[in-house]
Length: 584
Image 1 (cartoon, rainbow, N blue to C red):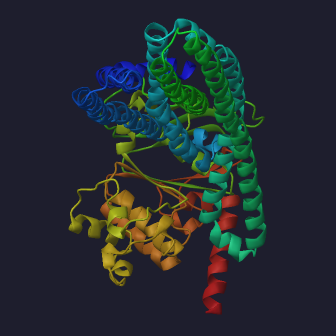
Image 2: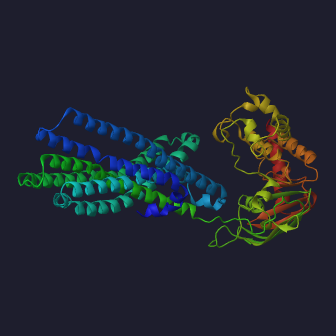
């Protein structure tokens, strides 16, 4: 029952609803004692030929009144207890979602999307059931069972009651053993479901790649194997689960057998009446539900405990990037200064990803970042927006360390267009206005014009109301890039970061976009990471990175005047462009 202790914070929070619901449950348990007693009295009066019409109507009226009362009370306790459990599900989902949004990218590098989805669905459902059906079965089994046993012992025969309860300790031992097995097996079943969930999400997202490489059969086979694993693990759970009802039925059956055998002897010996024996066996019938509920309770609780452990483990993971105690609550503005000695993604990494990165970028200037794939360009940008920390040195923005600002305020000043252009399954208008949902249509269109995507959008049937599909599946790579740029520009950020965000557009489109940026972002800072050097040749400062180090720096003219990677690559790209134009 450890999970009930773990959920005590919620039970205290909803104590009024739970206490009221439990009180109603207790009344129902008490009212259930009336029908067996009435039946016993009526049987004895019939045997003694003393039952009159008025008495019969009175007893029938009592039965109807108790049934109506139980109907109303059962309706009310369901609202109180089950209604509260739904609130628990809502709170845990909100906490999980908040936790997901607070976590840094390193968290998602360790976790799979399907696994996180399983936590927010199956696990939450199991915990919610514990706080609802679990509380019901716990209280109802104890209350109904307790009231029935007391009624049997005090109003009929305490000796026969003790005899009927002889098999019960065996049931307690067996159900406890089953519960331990169930906890272990259900934990494995949930892990298998998480893996299947992740496989489904991954396959649906990558269906184009799967089809392109003709891997449909292999992917189906892989899914079939994982699905089979889920089935086998759930069958393993079901095997244990299926032991509860037969065990309880056998125990209750033995109790009935003992009650009838010894009850008949007591009737013959005039220690009991026929009516009392009928009442006793009817009471014993009422014990069947508490016993079954007790077994069901183990099932629910063990599932809930396994799921709560999984969710708690997830929620216990600390945020790597937090606001400092006295964080500045305003958006930064001004010069940017990198004084970075070393940065590693993992402490175990032998070589740092970035080292000795030192540069000054005045407000309103443009910085170009170039270098081979894996040279550290994206990492440098993500450090500026505090997606990663743990570096030696400091990064200053507006005269203060970026760690001194509230994370939300820092990111308010920065518009970031990442390499992976993620678009939501919504309209183009909603995607552009994502960071500014209340933006006017004219503002949205102006941002689209700056990103040179307005004419493309106007060419669509539904124009700005065109739904792009999941991850922008209905758009070309260049269109997705330009919509992402428009989404960043609509904020008119103090600093704009373009992380290889023009790679999917042609040279002419690139030049138009860069010209628009120079014209509309005067006095604001821009940092452009690119593989195509034409995208950064207008920059005030260009840094050439290699293996995480700055190997060249200066303006385009300065870098072209010296031998090195930049000059060699620029000449090569110019020649490639001439060859392409000649081929056309």
